[in-house]
Image (cartoon, rainbow, N blue to C red; front, side):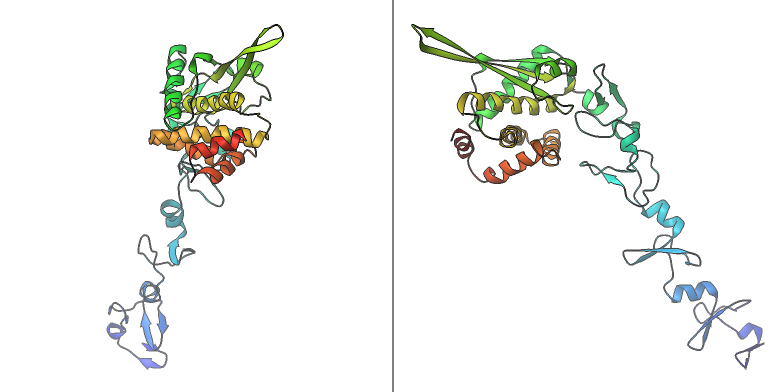
Length: 316
């Protein structure tokens, strides 16, 4: 046979890579001849996943080459909801769960932890009569019992007291309610409201002279939330009671709510548990311009200072 003007016995026309006889089509490079697959291998056109020749359309990602099918089936991250490849833009939550953005519109998010409620992520969930949706992860520790609410109030108060924020629980009571009741009790209610501290001062006068003033607080908290979420809410509302009693309370709503979220943060830090760390992450990533941004500003200001500096700031 003649190749490029040179004569070869058929059995002597060999591939420069595998040294086996070339039959049919071949590739040439620098005076040498190759099987098509061997040429692809020499040129580095091999899939970095399956190690087979890239003799079709391929994809380059981070300087690695893949068959399109290998890339989509094995390299692309999979949706945590439907397990299909995530092509293009996708959403990632604070738990590093990645999923198609459209799942946020077609599925409910948990009112406790913000996870997408589905079988694969949360083992399903519960729908409450007041319109809330709770995943089964959070429902496993959901609190409905009034006595348990009271115990959590004591727990949160004691831990905040240990870091320097003290309360008189004799004048504070807690009531677990659904969203409809909370809506009727809370000022400036919105669908993100999860608790409310109703504070009232009773004054005693003798001959038109004030001789005593006692302040009472009723904390309303959404029931049916996970224990750690309720603890975080209680810490927030307890801080409202402290602000009511110890300050002129004439600062902005951003400072007010940001400071109360900072109290939740201080409480959650004392627990040093994964559920508490998740709640801290929710505080840090809250997009609300008052609650979320307010918290970040207060934390940035007082993270490396004492709690007494924080309280003194609020007083003065």
